[in-house]
Length: 89
Image (cartoon, rainbow, N blue to C red; front, side, top):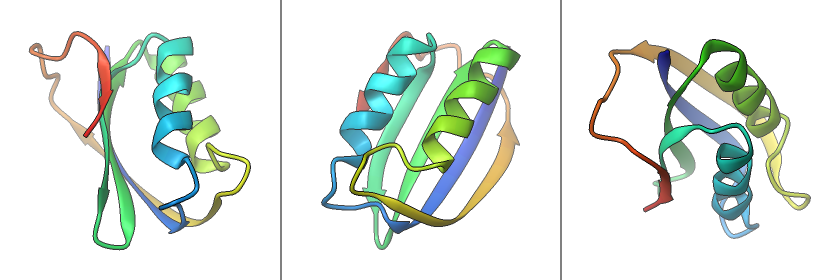
């Protein structure tokens, strides 16, 4: 089990990015949150190593068809045992 904090920059607000991110998280059994923050999207995600890698790969390639990811930052976090699903904030 791993936990990551991901900041995604580019055209990621107002294009369905959070909705698609939540759907991708459900597909890969990822728990955590996604929310718009200033001019980027912030994701807290945790799951099994391979599932989390696939999730992050999908999200950073552009979760929604109308999005365009220009850059992203990923940092490792401690596991959050209170998360039991993935939700949009």
